[in-house]
Image (cartoon, rainbow, N blue to C red; front, side, top):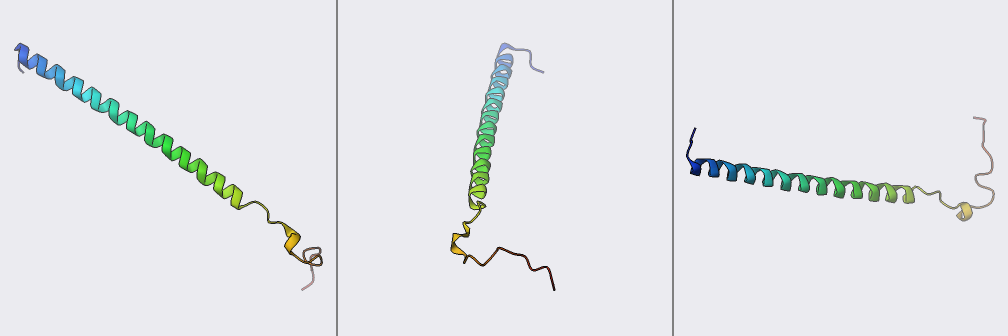
Length: 71
């Protein structure tokens, strides 16, 4: 263990750099989570829009009105 002032200053600078690096990593992680949640919401919205019921106006009026229960 170094007791000199230079050693203490060097250790303090290393700690400061490590703290700054950790802050940057946390900020990047939060940004990544935000982007992932936005993408997930976009996918959910796209899926719900695609799953909307299709209009039956294209079917002839005699189709889809009854169920044949005999086999």
